[in-house]
Image 1 (tube, rainbow, N blue to C red):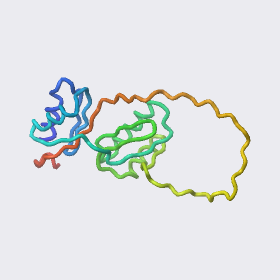
Image 2: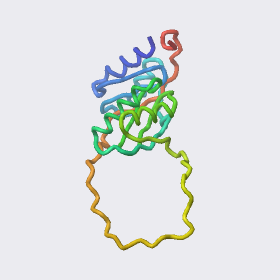
Image 3: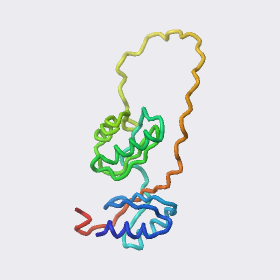
Image 4: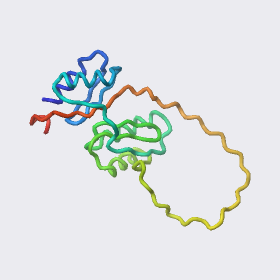
Length: 169
């Protein structure tokens, strides 16, 4: 079928480690430049472009290390409709067609907190009329967090042109 043809075209490249492909997206891991990946998809008879933005962006809290990031990514990718998730300690970009509330529930079930990025959360307590004076306090030393791995070598592509019956199913 079409998705398998695109997967085979991408994975035949020596600079591609893995390609996960469905009708709408390809998540490609490796060292191949974006333009070369797109050329491979076009050579297979389909269209592709670098995915311009995630379908859903989440703000995350409670994650403190790369293990937490991996746990959260697995939880998000297990949600029906999610094709891929790029997770960092404080945010996640989710590709696919999934209900944002299901994504939040998956993160919370994994033991962390999430909200849709940019969502306005109403304040539940009234604002004070006067600003209370605070004693002078020295700031506490911030614990150092492990550096996030910003060398993620995966690329998400938007695919089009797959119209055969086996791809639609």
